[in-house]
Image (tube, rainbow, N blue to C red; front, side, top):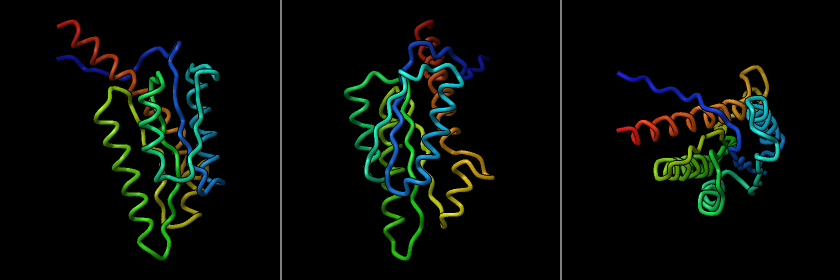
Length: 160
């Protein structure tokens, strides 16, 4: 029985970070975490592209464009949706998640979900470099790991 883990070299790999401008104080911290994770794990700074979109709802569209027009080894979606007094939160968060998941399943490029969905600004700040860590860093690490898994699975399939 083979056990496949996501450990692979990153030389020459390019990553796309899609960051929502809405709740920018928080999303910039997520971006800093994601970029740092990639660079600290061997991805060249010149191989990290950043695309800014208005909000989380627009992330799947930009990810789709990145898949069609870029040669990326992984895409990291970064945003922040904070619950308000109306159902708007449910629509935006749900559709962002649904769109990202649909793209991730349909393509051989890992797309990871670093979109915070919190009840309060304080919860979001805690997850954007505060006492709950940095979910941008975690999403970038997941993209690196999943890229390694995709490559290992592809190599294994080619060997059979």
